[in-house]
Image (cartoon, rainbow, N blue to C red; front, top):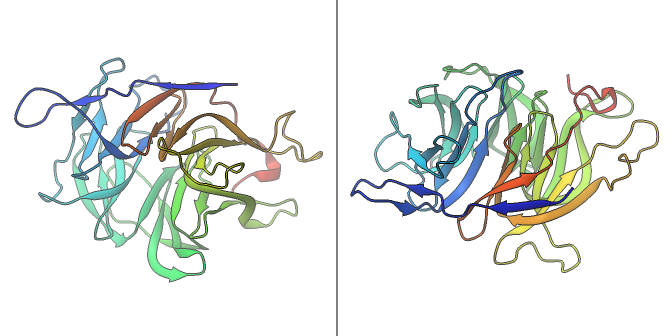
Length: 294
C-alpha cells in the first residue's frame, strides 16, 4: 500500500523552439468511461502563464499547449479533466471555460473559483459568499456543452472535486473536509468528515485523495507540499475501514492533486514540479449504499 512518485522532468515546447521543463500550479486526471482503453486525459495549468497544457502519449513526458479559443493572456487558475479528452476550468476573473474533445475552449455561463466533473455532473464553487466559503452549484454535464442549468447544492466551500458516481467533496475556508453523500439515516447532504486538507481529488471509483497537513508537526507544508492522504470508506455496520484507518497517510507530498482511474495519482508539489504516482488506487464507495450519492 505504499506510494512513490517520479518523473519530475516533464517538458513543453515553447514558441521559441527547444524544450523546457514545465512548472505547474494545478493538475487533473479525467475519469475514464467504463470499459474504455483510451489515452489518459491529464491536464495541467502553467505556474506563471496560467495556460492549459495536455499530456501527450504515455511515456513521452511531454505536455502540449491547448489554448485555442481562450483570449490571449488570460490566466486559468483551476482545471478539471472530463472523461472524454476535454476539460473545464475557471479563469482569474471567475469565468468558467469548457474544452471539447478537440481542446477548443468556450466560455460557459456563470462565475466560479473552482470546478469539478464526475458522474455526468459539473460542480462549481460559485461567487456568492456564505459560511465556509462560496455557494456550491451543480449541473448536468455533457461534452461540448457550455450552457448549464445551475442548481444550488446547499453548501459552501473553497475547493471541490467529484467522483465517478457524481458525488462531490469540498474543502472550506477553514480547511475542513465535507462530502456530499447520504448519512446512516439516509439523509443526503454535506457530511463533515472530521478532517482538514489543502486540496482534493476523487477517482472514477470514488476514492477521495487529499493533500493535507503534517498533523504530528501541526504544519501544512514542507518544501515539497502537504502530506498525501486517502479516505478509506467506513463499513456500514462496524464503522471500520477494512483493517485500515479511515484517514490513511501515504508516502508522498504535493500541493495540488489529480486522481483518475487506472492512471494513478499525480501531484504538483510546492515547487511546481509534476510528480506521477505509482501504487494503489483502490476501490472507493461504488455500490456502497451507506454512503451512496443520489
